Image (cartoon, rainbow, N blue to C red; front, side):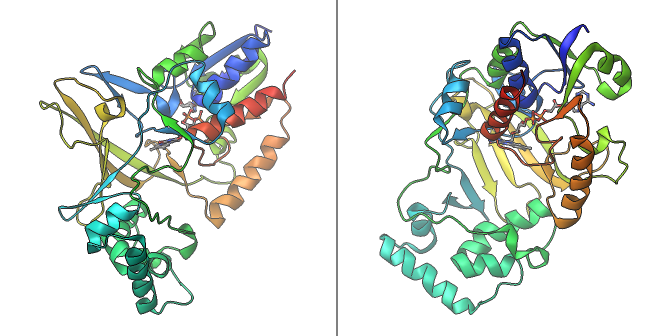
Length: 365
Ligand code: FDA
């Protein structure tokens, strides 16, 4: 055999797996159907700005091992995600914290803020929430729900909040400090110079081919190695024999503007229902860019259909049952390892997919 592993997909799962196996002296070939490496963390250089082509990616983790691992390939900056919400022209800090409560009600102390939320929760009279709207109001009251949750969530899911199940929102983090840091994790940041640096370092010295769809030459690639690592869609691998798994997708509309600073922040959410996009990303702020121009991206959520990018798995009962059937088939294969967000039909953050690839690689001889 020419290779020990043929790895289908040059996203983080494929790249980390390939790196770890190469360290053990194994010969790997990594292929990807896109015309670049990196999967969804790939960035495109526009006007010297790293544009997150498949959606904004902010690295965050509590796991020191994973943080040290990624930092061993590329240094990370100190970017801290602190999104702004724009509701009908009013601006609010996220996540919900003392700044938000001051902006909503002019309350200044945690005690006043707690009392205000409690008053609205009690006024709702909701004891057993029957849908997402009731669930959210029963947790944070109607002001936060109507201004900051309702429109955004309805755009994200393409359905009315009263038609969405309550379980989608288990809890809504409310912080009674003046702290706009979105993530609670100990570590967060963006690779200095962009995510491509991380992927290039992981794949350094490993043979790669882009613009190659595994399914178009499956037999050839299967015959090149003892084992195949597949990180594409599991339903596609099994010819959709149990039906198609559903996803939510996104349309990204990128625009280059002749101004150095469009919105003063990397992430601004638009939380009213009438504006069709959910947020505007201004990429340069992830890396404190000083370029003369800027690139912004409007995000429009949409249903997934053949030909569009499958972004978020819809982990409802119907899809979970279909996935379990594919998983059984996958477990019967001695040759193929299925890993990553598409093959496991699972939303993984970057640190989680890296941990999963490291764990899988450590099981191999
Ligand atoms: P990934 O999709 O990256 O790679 C799979 C690769 O397989 C793709 O490149 C694909 O082209 C290739 N492939 C598929 N079929 C093939 C075939 N037949 N032949 C050849 N190649 C094939 N996480 C986080 O920690 N912080 C964040 O801020 C975000 N933000 C974010 C925004 C959006 C919009 C999404 C959808 C996701 C995030 N994430 C995130 C999650 C992050 O994107 C995710 O954890 C990793 O990209 C998953 O890496 P994988 O290798 O599993 O998949």
